[in-house]
Image 1 (cartoon, one colour):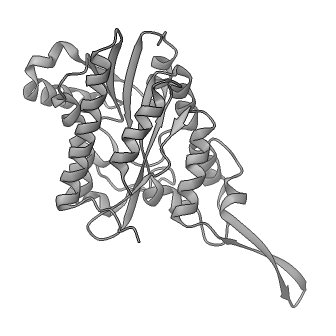
Image 2 (cartoon, rainbow, N blue to C red):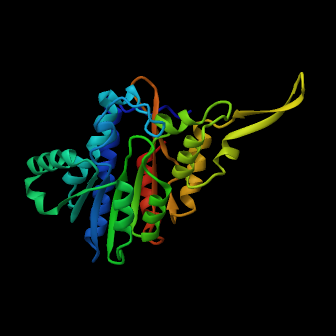
Amino acid sequence: MTSRQQFGGDWTNQKLELLRKHLSAYTRILNKKSLFFAYIDAFAGTGYRELKETSSATSLWLPELADPEPQQFLQGSARIALECNPPFQKYIFIEKNAGKIAELQANLYRDFPEKKKQIILIQGDANTVIQELCEKNWRHHRAVLFLDPFGMQADWPTNEAIARTKAIDLWILFPLGVAVNRMLTKDGRINETWKLRLDRIFGAQDWFDEFYKTSPQPSLFGETVQTEKAADFAVIKAYYVRRLKTVFSHVAENPLSLYNSKNSPLYVLFFAAGNSKGGKVAVKIAQHILGN
């Protein structure tokens, strides 16, 4: 039986070290090729880094994310990229809030002064910025993109744009426990706002038929149809892997569920590669890292 993977303590350090190995392997491989390669961090200063209360159905902030464990993992990924050797040729950080951009710049310039010229900070909506970046000519360019929204901000068209480049390897921290599973009510009565949001994150509408079952039930007024949720985390994870496979050439088959120290499920870490030639090797490395 596979044990649950948690953010806290030694596990966090272990997974961060594995991510370091992945990025180092990536830059070593690309360093030998005549390609320009970059690290891209979307939602660089939002979400879990800026906790607040909200009643928005599309955000669903949870107190579990105030714990230091998930923040340690999420914030650690950018530092690992900047410490990577051989280095990336560019580091692109996307953040919507102007104040956070200034704070992010100060922190990065302070901690990595030798990389000032390689660090690019872009203020704007991550979905818009990424899709615009993806429209450029990627023939001689490659990138690793870490897509780590707090809630439901990442849209499926962004995944499609990334895949179309055939040049970007994607790590996506999918908010399964944080938001998605909470929207999938037990009785299937999901309000239209939530349905539209789920359509956007899955890039399809058949998720309802995948996650719910109906059965006839006798009642005082004749037979009625009862709808109930039939999908657990494993079913939802498998569905999202299939969705990723519709646009990416290679997708890791073993996404990693992440739990906090209180055993509350938060995210699932997925990996997808867009390049048909290099993607097979990239996924092999990623599956070793995910290792569950």
